[in-house]
Amino acid sequence: MVAPLHRCSCFSGATAAAVAPLCKTKLYTMDWSIFSHPAVIWFLIGLVLLLLEFLIPGLIIFFFGIGAWITALAFLIFEPGINIQIVIFLVSSVLALVLLRRYLKKRFFKEGGDNTASLDNEFIGRTAVAETDIPADGRGKINFKGTLWNADSEVDIKKGDRVVIMAKESITLKVKPKN
Image (cartoon, rainbow, N blue to C red; front, top):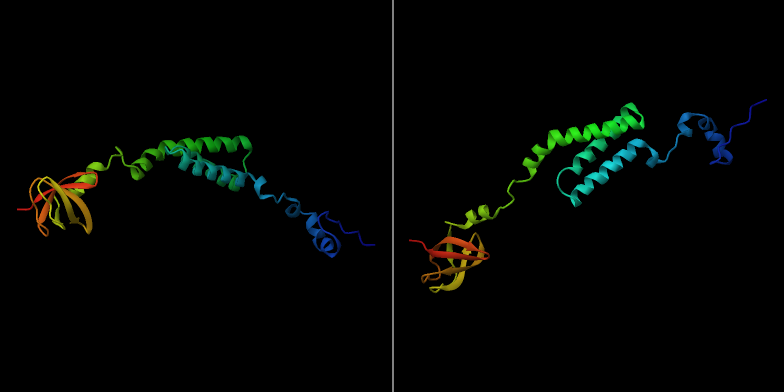
């Protein structure tokens, strides 16, 4: 007499008979819920931490996200217990923070943060062309790098004359005739 096939509760009929051998294996009895796998949980924690870095800038939370991803990778390779996972997370996060933060901050963020001096240097001393007449102590237009700018001058400047930019105040350039 043939032993009855083991029936899986999630299948019926011919399908149950076809998958019955799988029902007895570890492969089938594994929990297939992807969100219950520790590596996926660590990966999602890392993703949330990396996204939080955009909301709370400072280049610190980023490294804890990297630590969570290293922990996910370690789980896939070694399957350590929860205590070891937490140690891996903390050690890898702090090591990444200490070893890489200064380098990445210099690489991606300029110290000082004030770029107005470099922007002024782009204008001051450069040559432009007067697009309109600029009366003494009056305002006219100049063409600088293909853009029309408001310009003030202390002396009369005729349309088409070359001018030198002396200063920049907001969107108005102070000019004088080029000699």
